[in-house]
Image (cartoon, rainbow, N blue to C red; front, side, top):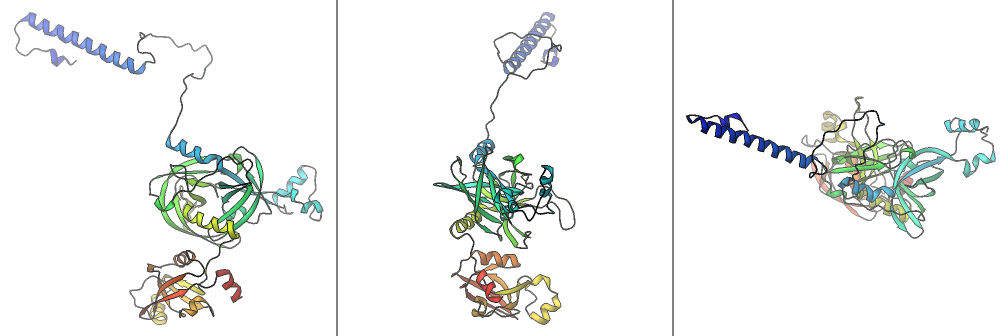
Length: 427
């Protein structure tokens, strides 16, 4: 208690002064005792025992405290629901003469021989790369794993490492280079957990995101990193080693994603797959290093693709039958003199050529038409057009709005042929 509380103002009676002072002192002692007692009650494991002062004996060995505790949180619960369904995927290939793997032969007293019959045996396949995957379906004797196409690219054999370290043979069901997805079939004998998909259309920027996978390979299998959803609907366009265009309408996250995490799941706080981790940006076009920019294929897109891969082993997409260029890539002079479109049109896709007997030609589209909308939605890039087109199926109709010189027009395009057939037809 503060001394101001016990200092008299105009009291003349000394006994009154001592009485008040005594009350103040007693009150202060009582208050201190209560405070100390309260503190001790909170801090002491047994508040009924008297406090004791003990000296620390530094002569004995340091020991671990016998205090035990159990941590349970939304994150640990979410991870438990998925972790045992996450696998490592090993891409097996035959070692070549100039492959670093061929050095293992000399190391173990064997000389690589490209003419040897054993060189062509399946048993001579060696790990070429590793990635991650997740088991999403168990159907009788089979279980299905989704991963990235670039994880299984050029594989001559596949091994899948389960959560307990068990290795099983994988059979490639189908791949889709455009979305960078692949499906692998394995035996279900030792599969004891299957992950489920959440609705990626309902994601909110800022909500928790958890990545699980095998960064740097199966040595670090089932590594867990946590972050948030940084953004949605990020358009990521890239090329794989085979030269195929990859186009992902991606989820962006700052959860740590490293080489080897590819193909592993990005999950929400409910323990549902909301994306399949695919790429990360480590450096900008201006050579600036960046951190925390990973991207995952949204679960709704994943489900659509893997259902087609399970059924047909490939994804069939409709073809439009045009070559194109973005309007922003040409000068204002070319826009005025060649295209002759209004200067208010600043975004769109220029048709450079139209294939004979293609859906585009049948709909009346011509060279130098500038497409500005698909099904009423603005189109400003080649990626926008491809994304809109690839959401369709062969046999669907697509509404195309375009400018032919100064006149805006809209036509219905019947998507009667798939892209692969259209490409073969034009060869």
